[in-house]
Every structure is written in C-alpha cells, then in structure tokens.
Image 1 (cartoon, one colour):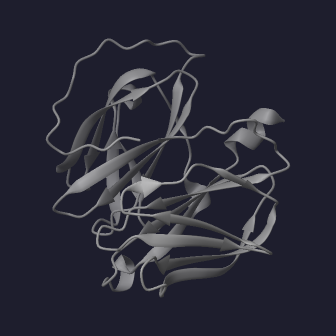
Image 2 (cartoon, one colour; image 1 turned 60 degrees about the vertical axis):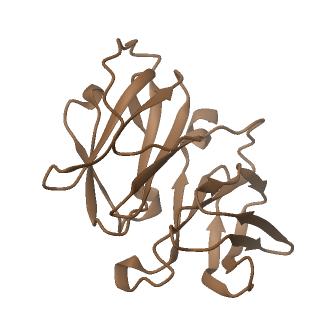
Amino acid sequence: MFWGCECVTEIDTPKNISPSTYAHLMTVTALPEFDELKIFNEFWQKPFYIFYQNDGNNYQYKDITYGLNNIRVMTRKDSVIFNSTISLEKTKYYTFIIFGSKQRVQAMLLRDSIFNYKKSNAYFRCIHTSSDAPQVNFIINSNYPIIYSLPYRTNSNFTPVVPGIYSIKINDAITDSTLTSIKKFEFKEGFLYSLILRGYSEGKGSKTLECQIVESDEFYKKSE
C-alpha cells in the first residue's frame, strides 16, 4: 500500500522500456470535490481524464513502464493537486486510488494480485476512503455473511466467493448503524471487484456516502 502527499518532488529516473514488460495501472477517483481529474505520466505523453461519476466497469488498466514513475493529478484547469512517485514491477497489475479531501489529496497504490486464481470464482476486496467516516464494517452476504472491519485508509485483500447475487452493507463499526447499502449485486465468474466506500458522512448530492464498485475481467481474459 502507498500513501503520498502533494508536496513530493519529481524524480528523474531512467525508465526500463520494453514492449512486452510493462506494468499495468488502473486509476480510480474517490475524491468527491472534483467531477473529473486529469492524470499524467510521461510514458502516456498526454493526460487522460477520469470521472467521479463513472460506471465501475468503465475503468481500464493502462500500460506503463515499470520501475519508478511520477504520477501527476490535475484539475481540468491544469492545477496540480497531487504529485508523487510510485514504484511498479514489470507485468504486475495495480490500482491507484485518489481520495481524501480538497484540502488534503491522498492516494493508495494497491497491488492487484491473487494467489492461485481460479476463473470459476469471483473475487472482492473492501477499501475505506471516506475521510470523515468512522471505522466501518463491510458486510457481504448471500447465505453467510463475510465481514471486514476497516478504519480509514485501509483495505482488505481479495477474497474468493462463489459467483452469484450478494447484498452489500457498510455499517458504523461502533453503533452498527447502516451508512450505505446495495441490496443486490452480482459477482460474476472470474471477475475482480473493488468495493470502495467514498464520499462524506454528512455529504449531500454527489458527495453523499456510497459504495463504489470497480470491476475488472483482466485476469479472466488472461486465463482464457
């Protein structure tokens, strides 16, 4: 896991470039103040946009050189709100999540790896990025509940489950009151799901507390 701040300086580091040995990076925003953000790395040559209101299956991995990489996050008016260096291993997959608040933008770099991946399973992990929410319990329930208790800025590992329809509920870990929920969600065979608590406890409209679900079938496609 990785946390950074906007004050980190750029490092001019030689890159190892080979067409068959890229790393792979998916960038997700959980920062409610900005409808859209621009992401820049020198390998991509020009910025690309990510959007807060985005179906979870619209996120994609992008090839990137492995080793040390500078990631710059900008507003649509090109104001830099986050700038840091991350380290990536060749051929590995990562999710880079931007979160926090307008006053303190942060990021998490998560390695998207699964030991003994089986395409007959579905996999999920839970991620807490809501800066004013207390410690929470993620409760994933079909026949038997799976519970992860997470404080702010933490995540679980991927957990295998039988594909099917599940309910997802996120409760305050102390009071057990429900903060947000999804009654029915299908975990599909071979897919990976990131369940991200984002928004604010007191937020309204687009800033309300919610569970964002980002899905990927990259591992399923690789195993075909």
